[in-house]
Image 1 (spheres, helix red, strand yellow):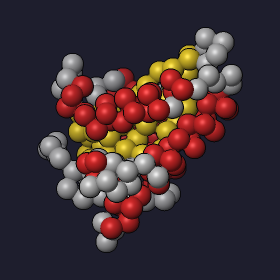
Image 2 (spheres, rainbow, N blue to C red):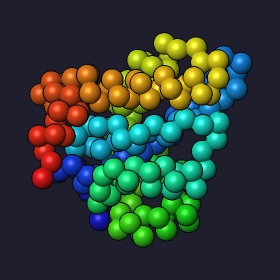
Image 3 (tube, helix red, strand yellow):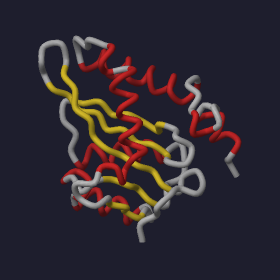
Length: 167
């Protein structure tokens, strides 16, 4: 079963990769993870390369602070369909929710988030080093969650909206 819409916090998370470049032209990747119901960005991993084991480790770190989602939505990229990610999902009772190939609009929350992330952070910064990118990206993520109101949340911040919906 693949959920169409998140109905409560930690019901459906979504994740995807985004690429950018440092000032010297060297590519780096980011992995963003969102809660579709609260719109919280649960984390952004920035690294020169991101493999399935990095995804598993990053997801595990997020689970240190919150319960696992019922579902995790993604495209069918090799990082997300890998055996190690699928095993982690099964071990944590998280259902995979793959979108159909070639239909990124079916993962609209992460696509919209990445538009904002690119416009408000990545395109405004000129990162000399990966560590600088990691620090600036984390600061932007906190700003996004704590201070940036969202029209889809009745102009509340994701953190304020989530606080009102905890059990």
